Image 1 (cartoon, rainbow, N blue to C red):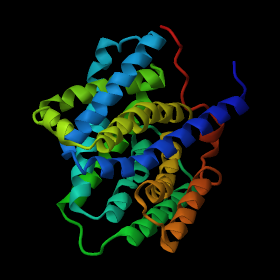
Image 2 (image 1 turned 180 degrees about the vertical axis):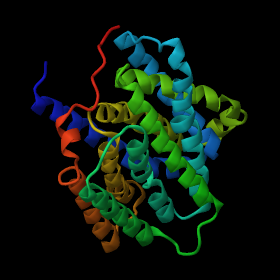
Image 3 (image 1 turned 90 degrees about the horizontal axis):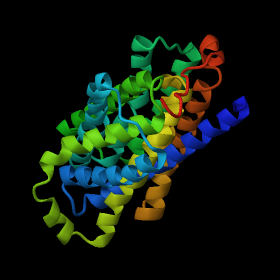
Length: 308
């Protein structure tokens, strides 16, 4: 048995790892798109993630999912590891990165709405206010990075990707009472990779032509922001209500700007800093005054046994 303090520390550590790696993904995608098409980038990324998770599955003697849960596994794979990355990659080719970042940060909003409708989770008015404040911070950051003008059909793709990501959170949350976080993540990434295999044509030509730095960026996207960060995200979801856990995602743009500054030389503006303060303030509000007391005091999911 572990103490509540130890469990809180493990959840906090998992959230930090998730935010850091997902924040780095935006710079990695931009680097990879220099040499790879959106579909080939997604395929190579998740082939790399799948290979890394083969090692994890062997080391942990991972079980296969129950037959009745296989359709849900493929649904998770489609939502988060097939449709989501392709839609995001294509969308980032057609609209400025700032509006794209704003639109993808609607995931916590969609997740909170879906968790209220399907999981019976509740937020106090302060919680919804915190989500609004955090989203305002994401909007401020996006406006500071945007190039002006209207949003094209690419924006619709990114909104669809955000809705797809929130659906993944809800379905995964429902499965975390039966499986370990690492199991669900591994199976879903393998399923998503299988669904991406029809895009294999032309991939090897792009690999041969791409600079090694761009290819390494895509492999990094698979191993860290995909394989590792989705496992740590599943840990967070297994311990917190989906609506509360998703509020942490508003911190991702802050990390994205810092990593973009170090990796791509993108210097954040005062608007970026102001938006970052709003985003972090909203997360703090959701996780303090915004929590439903009965939900805060009750466990949200039981940790599945290590062996079944």
